[in-house]
Length: 498
Image (cartoon, rainbow, N blue to C red; front, top):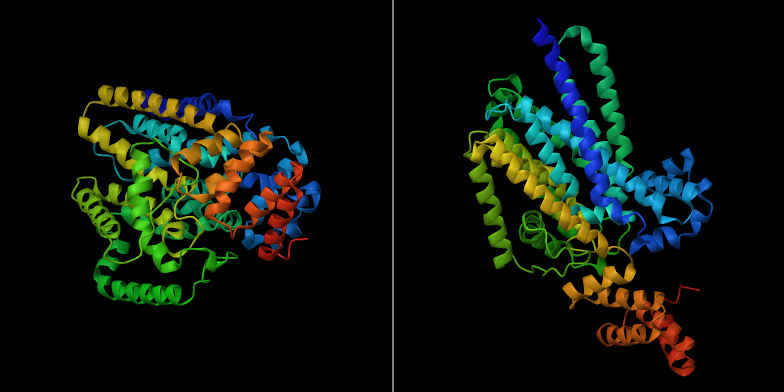
């Protein structure tokens, strides 16, 4: 009786220690970025945002309701920082890091519960597998953009709602007694509130119901009522799904503005090309960076796929099919297929139907990453079949990823270091060149800034910011006639700007 009583207590203590260790690791790995300046879009949306001069006007229930579908809760979180910290980046970074650590601890508990629900067949390694899976999520260098880039808080904050809601759903599944109906009702309402409120941070929460449903049928026995129903009605269900997807695809391709929000579709590559490009982005960029996190970049130069028979499209689709088939053949196939589905479903809005300005951005992988981490961590224990050796390998891997993360943090130190790194890795793109020129002007190196802007002007004369910023620099140097020419060109491009 004594051992049975102590076991749950020792497990709880073990989880507390693991959570504390994760928090400490997060502080050690990300601590060198807390004094970083505002960069990239954070300058426009925070530093130069006039509405944040009066943050109290944003910190209201009325603002949240009116801007609910325009990431109102994200704006409120930024306004809260502005109210407390004004334009000191430290507080903004602290909140981002705190949310990332909270998400990591949630991942640890979620992974541990999942191993119990899937009846982990490889032994009593749940705590070790969960801890190292969460640690890799915490320190993986691809997460740097989401944590350090302040305006990417949308990914981190939305993930907090998503993961907490999923964790509560796992708790819900463990409540079997009828006398706990009140607890089930409270959990259901809480999960619903988290989903709705989180949607006001980022629309990633739209995938939550599907993830929850897939988890439920994955952990349910194959002879359960829900799985029997799905098997008996698989053909009608499949037909209905195909019809729905066909209608959705027709709508997407016939209406470029559908589901893209306030963006201007004429500034993008087009939905057909965007959708054709995404399988290659997922496999040859995201998947590659997860396995080999080197040469990370804030503005990657991605090749646009223009036709169905492109090598990149066909090869990436075949690779996805191979991964799915290989995992389906494993003993723990239900666990693996769910983890793979987590990765692709959470990526799906930004990597399929919602056309965005950029074909790829590392921060989009933030919440999808646990799916791949679960597969890799669990798979390592399963293949090696030796707990001590597996833990040693994962300790070395975590150390390596942590070092790479710290080095990547240094790149985000200021605008100049960020865009020097980006331009070096994407010399063919215009935006890194423009932002590097701007970074030099911020540092007071006008001569280098003019040189870079003039290079950018030869490549993109129809871009307002090049014409205007170059005109300002010419004016500072006393080159008034040349400045007037640039300002006249800027006026033609953007006559609506006072």
